[in-house]
Image (cartoon, rainbow, N blue to C red; front, top):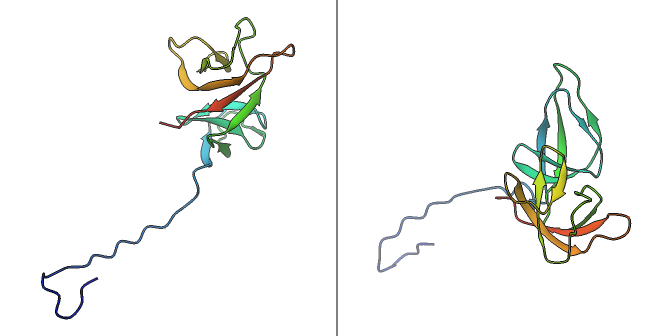
Length: 131
């Protein structure tokens, strides 16, 4: 902030930016002919996370959805049940099968396993940053 008698001329530029959110969720469009189930994992508009509500769109219909993208620990059974999912392994999203996989080829990196697959085919994983 300049003051009277300041030895160096200074120009002050005020830049106001309003924080919109903490970035823990994002509003994304839901395309036509899509069924979204609450608390399931999805990749929508480049964001990967858990749906906060159920949405179904028909032909010629679109909607919006809040997707939780917070870097946190999540529990899911949306996995390739033929794979081991041991603690520490990186997990990827297979968009074709709508499930987590250990296979990186052609799939998006989404996190790391924090609790190994149990007898009910459930894992816990830490969701990585959205990049």
